[in-house]
Amino acid sequence: MTNVNIFEQGKPVTGKFFTFVKVGDEIQGTYIGKIMVKNDKFRRDCYNYEVLDDGGNMWIVPGKADGADPETKQVFDRTMRTIAPGQIVGFRFEKEVDTGKGNMLKQIDIWADPKVVNEEWLNQQEAHKASEEMDGQEMPLPSDSTSNDTVGGQTLSFDSKENDAVLKAASPPDEPTEAPANPSEDKITEIQTLAMEKLGVTDAEGVRDAVMEATGLAFLPANLDKIIEILKATE
Image 1 (cartoon, rainbow, N blue to C red):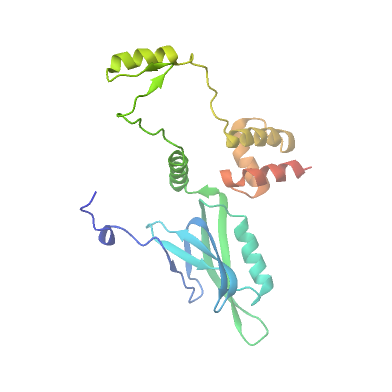
Image 2: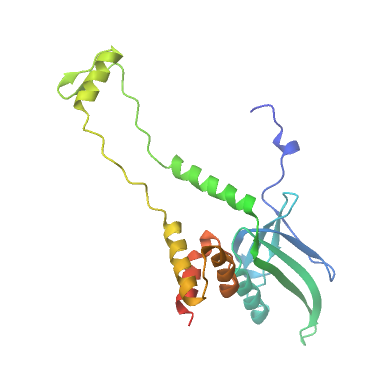
C-alpha cells in the first residue's frame, strides 16, 4: 500500500505527557507498560507509564521522582507493579497534600480492577508475538538450479516427475510429530488445581474469578507465575 499518507491517517505512537493541572484531572485507558528513565533533569531516576486511551491516543503518565518523596514514590510504583499490561487503569488527581516543607504535593490515585482488561489489545499482542516467532524461524534456502544435486547416489534431472520419484525413494518414512508444549497451558492447569485445593473452587468456570479475587492479579499470561507463587503460599 503506497498511496497512504500515514501522517494524515495515522496517529503518533510515541505518546505525549499527560499533565495533572487541577484537582479532578484524570486519564484512563489500557496499560501498555513502563519505561525506565535515568537521570531525568527534574525527576532523576523514575518510571514513565504508557496508557492507550479509547481513541487510540498514546499517553505517558509520569512516575514519581526518585528521592523527592520516597514514601509516595514507593507506594505509586508498588501499586503499578500489581497491574499487568492489558488491564484498564485510571489515574486521578484527587487532592493536594501539605508536605509540611512549604510545598504542596499532588496526590494521584490509581484505579484498576484485575477483571477489567482490554481483550482486543491482548489478542493483538498474542498475534504479534506469534508473528515474531515465525519470523525468527530459519527458512530453507532454494537450491541452485545450475548445480548437479544428488540424492541417494542419484543425480536429479530437470524432469520434476523423475525428481519426485528419486526424492520419495530416498526419504525416510514419516514419523509422527508431537505438538510443541505450551507453558501457559501447563501453568493454567496448575492454577486450576491450586484453586480447588487452596480456595475451595469446585468447578473450572469459577477458577478465574476466585483467583483474581484472592491474588489481586489479572488472569493474564504475564501474571501466571506470580499467581502460582501466591496460591502455593496460601494456607
